[in-house]
Length: 478
Image (cartoon, rainbow, N blue to C red):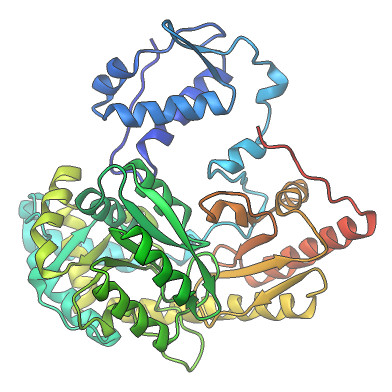
């Protein structure tokens, strides 16, 4: 039997980790056609996961044609797999959150900045300082809620965003995705309802569905969700939580108006539900207009605020925090403990120094200046060539959201771009039903200015070619 493993600290759902390993072994012939897969119970026990996780992995394998289920017998590697079916990356990978990328591509798909921008030299100095000061204690398990000095530093850090809280209400987490997972474990049971923006962050949907939640989407407008639609559905569904990104939303880049923020808070209180606010880039504001987190206006203690440092600091370090309503603090700590005991003590101590000594502030200013140049380069180039798309301009963040004109298919455009070594993200990935085929998301985070120029020119050439040839065919999804 091939050895399988899962990494519960990895920023990828467990069922997708299992799916990807089976996919690899089936494609390279290690698991030949007709091979019988382990039973759900046996594999779940071997990997230390629940049965639902394996069921979801097997279901995805079946949907993609890698395995067949035989009633009363088990699950087998499909005998219909041919080499041609497995070569390259196709539209099925796209449908399950995987984007083709190689080192020669212009990368408009990723929101992770270039590694050259990570504060490696500062980090090296801080690590040395922490090790010299704390010796072996730096590697001890921390309090489940997190290293206390860091939690106190975070309290000071978020005052700039109008948030005043007690360090006892702060839970340190291993990145924003774990924050969503912790909240899901505490609040969501099978069959519960969760409201999300439409469109929204795809991996949040995956996390909620992994808990058996029913997803209800609320249309997103230029200044936040449609309030009338929100209240109408609150009366009907009574959700456990509303998942939002009020500042520089992913994927649209929009920010909520203050009027809508207040209305949503009132509705959450009125209908006795929680708001999960996911904040990953509010520092990247390139306008004179101030955008405070929803938590800054939360007089009802209804907002669960998740803040990730990963994208702006260093993605691989996985660090962030939750500000919890008073009645949920202990439950979140227990859920975090069940996930991974505690976030790396060394990383917490290092980041505490990073905040206390003002190094974070210096890094943000440098990082923001670089991102601002990229932002305006992409913005200006997109505005100069709007013939085949509409664009709503954000004030900051990482993303531009384009609505395609002339019935152009986003999935078709994605495949054409791949052929020209340009990577974009089709918008269907950000909708719960994955039906939308008229939007694309572009990010400038990984691209220097010259690559942004080249990438937008390539994009417009492809759009022009598609339009001129009326080559708007849809790719069948199987």
